[in-house]
Image 1 (tube, rainbow, N blue to C red):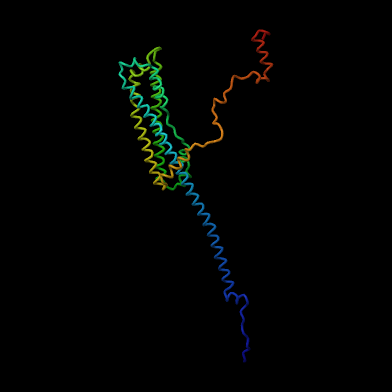
Image 2: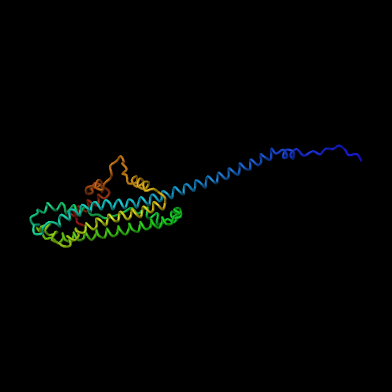
Length: 290
């Protein structure tokens, strides 16, 4: 049987696939879509990670700046106590048998200065409270050595603050007690510098001065560990602290409570009560019987 000359032809679509143009377009579309998805989610993840790093750095900077500010407050107090120590040392060097020869006014100003220079230690606990009570902050830090060391800093600061303020309370109570026991006309400087408790308190200035220097140095030492643990340079922390401490100038006068003090109430402001006031005035002045 003679075979017919029939030639099989592929469908057009199959021929197009065979040539590869549609197939390549499809592959490129899939690849482009995949890349787009990866980039979208990858960029979002990268931005989120960058934000976490930025948040972690800002939290660390706030905490370390707070610790450095406490050290600076202690530095200021140390300078003030050094002045008290100088005054007290001079007072204790005066011969006791010659105290009556000194005019009270010449020494009273120095005693008042010595009293005014001693003050309480306080520090802003906002950063401490946020750091200590926020689990999210701890998680974001991701460095438990840093968290432990910061906690040690805060513990030391609070203990030092309590120690100092207790001494201030005792100092002020002692001075007040000695002065309250003075009799009218009694020679101030003679009375004070012959009182052993008073002499011991002003002698204590020297010990307190170098204790304050130690406190500031110890807190800075612990804070330098924080900087190493979190990977932030000391210069960054100091610059950040300086910026936070800089006084912001505003174009207006700072309000003071005394500026709002007024005289006794003006009776005219009680107009709604005038009938009652007139009635009571009449009773008081005997114009009518109650």
